[in-house]
Image: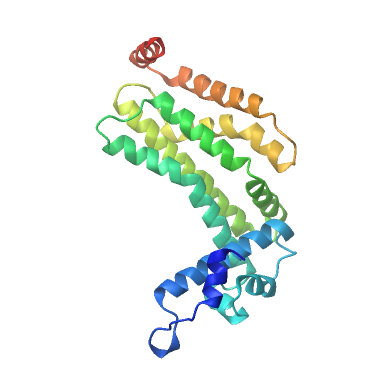
Length: 238
């Protein structure tokens, strides 16, 4: 249990009216519950994790878990959404920055930064474990795989497509179908490395860095306009 969890147990609890937990207490409890569920799913897999075990690890009652989640599948979906949010956050932040900042970063810098983040997330042991769980449960619970695809991959594609549209509006690139280009970029970047991670195979960090660099450069070389290439050459000289 984390220090925050220990303090929450040891500290005298102040309840709101009617004995209900305050909003702050409920937020802490829900965070502790998801943290416990995440750890157990990662350690034991889907079938090896029970609601009883999650409740015990989180320091809450079993009815408390069921008041928040319908069943174990619903709880796993919440864990999955949390991981998806972590993966998507930099994409959304980059698109917002490009739209609002007076001096936004150039396209090559943005794509390299996103590539490092997306690869580091995709190669984390937790991410590979989630992918294995999804593959194992896809037949019985296809909605979980659909959640990962629609809320994860497709939203990531749309986020990168938004960035590409912003760069295209500035005349740096030309893309007829931004979402298709974004899907190709993410597959180029993540496909091989993510498969190795799912299979538990070690990846040489130096090779991974070179591959990421090459993926971005190969993608940009295919969509840059003449003016975009000239601007990139000027930046490389400075």
